[in-house]
Length: 240
Ligand code: PEP
Image 1 (cartoon, rainbow, N blue to C red):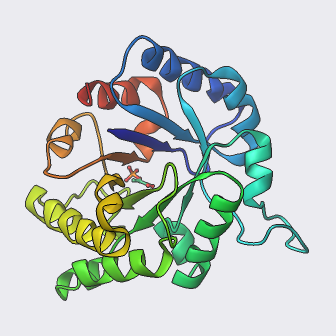
Image 2: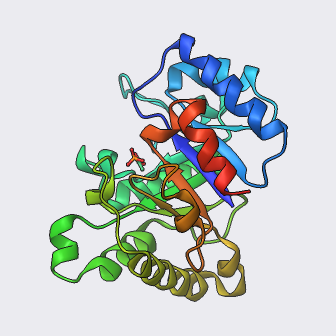
């Protein structure tokens, strides 16, 4: 299992104590691979304070460099200490990232040696229209790389489930995972069976064990509940 925490735009240097506490738990024995995607300002310090937790970024620019004021390239994030990057998060898609940009970001991440975690997910209107599988498979097809790279992962995050406290039925998550798996095997053959497919959206200690029991699930992407060891460690414990 791969369990990733996405801190979003939360956390200053004081919160590094949480990174250290989460790392301590993982070092003591955790069967999941654990990553924390912290704000870019904390990447270097977080990387310097962990032994077992993978440190990641939450987004990258698709260009290698250039006149993009305020943006960060994948190689800059890698240089700061990031090992992984989330791309295509619905909050970035809402801010303007289309499938082409998300695909270019995946390519940039791979070029910089970062493990790309590609997020896909339907809006509540798309869900109501019965388009969930079609939407997420189209997003995946548009942005997945031409070959399986080390650390490549997909995260299914229904837009309406993020931060809302609402989750799909377990059977609905299993159906989406199955559709994404078919897409991965179609694209990559047998290698597509090994790419982890995570679920994200209102994951908490109360629902983590049930989610991790869903057929085909490869882990979790956790937002607000990853901000402190108190709320994240019980989720990690559910992974074993
Ligand atoms: C997320 O932002 O990726 C996320 C899953 O958030 P939350 O767990 O807070 O719903």
